Length: 483
Ligand SMILES: NC(=O)c1ccc[n+]([C@@H]2O[C@H](COP(=O)([O-])OP(=O)(O)OC[C@H]3O[C@@H](n4cnc5c(N)ncnc54)[C@H](OP(=O)(O)O)[C@@H]3O)[C@@H](O)[C@H]2O)c1
View (tube, protein in one colour):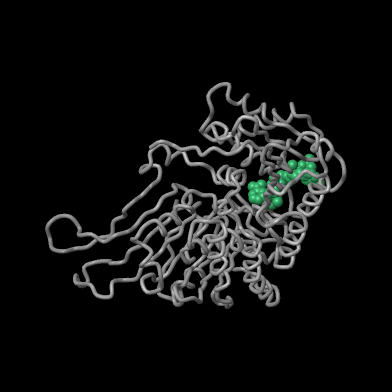
């Protein structure tokens, strides 16, 4: 299969926070891989910006080190790194002051796409937006990219939207949720809307329930202080899991166009049932052999923040009424695994009697080993009567698509190229983010009002026992958390 690189226009990409952790681990190595793939046209540049004193030569060393550490296995041929580094510049700039802005004005060019990546804390978004316009650095075609978290509740998200809207149109604002940049997430749309096979079955008449799991093996690590103010609900559910839920549940958009797709996602969020407390299980991990427990890791022995959450969610619309969506995410679990599973209903009549299972499951794995598997029922081979068994029809991208499948583009690099291309399909619109907060806010407020204390769970387990019971009450079981 021939890999196709769709060209983009030459650009100046300014990374505010260009020396930060995200730039080092994701943005810069991702850009390098796009450069290696031939997708960074001549004349394109990346301009790191932060308060630290550094010149462009020192920044190039910084970038080279980041690529050596996080560039992945797809190294470029000898000499190519230099070609990439030549495109790096750096300006010392303060988002909150006047220092450095004239240097940036001098550096920027008029005849290329201008994109500004706000890879800084959200408290700086408003300052950056204001100074960019004040210094005449933007025009109607300029884009800004903003990182999560986009607010910590509805009010703060609205305030951020207002601050950005003072200076930019919605079509210029790219709110990143890197889950949307994953190959399989887009494949989910291709599978649903590019095949006749699934869409007729994609409703409560044929789907028993849907499970969405995002499991991590790591704990809060060095992010304890930040994480404890957030928790799994704000950090994972309000954004990543809800985006996955939207894509799996939305109506077919009239076309694959940013607003058509986002309109349909928004309708899903607005149709979510309000949550009831006994449909939610919150957890905190216990100490493991080699790592402290949650409370010790965040430095608060009385912390009530959840490192795990499982919930049963209902969608009140024609398509999904009566089909539960079970969502769960947590830290320090048994395996690192992100997966969506569509569990179809049992046959309404089996001509084979009790000869085996007749339930189809479509599993969409986001990580690791991105791929899609459909469990189908066949006859067990050999003589001995009609015994049935379930076998996977497996589309592992690595196997099915050869080198192109194995060598997948990282979510960040894909999304950055979409910004340059001006395609907002895989980015969250302001009203989507606000609707997601409007749904999550009362849940969090309920916990706070009731003084809800998370259940504990063993590090390396599949989560609290109560989460198992959440499904057992509905005579269902979670899929194993397995790599
Ligand atoms: N790291 C991740 O994996 C990750 C994942 C998802 C989302 N995010 C989000 O991405 C953003 C950046 O995260 P990060 O982990 O890279 O943070 P970080 O490591 O703390 O880096 C922050 C960057 O911003 C710069 N900065 C801070 N204050 C500034 C100011 N007043 N003016 C200009 N530059 C300033 C810092 O450099 P100076 O101190 O030299 O100015 C540094 O380059 C945050 O919103 C975070 O929530 C991060």
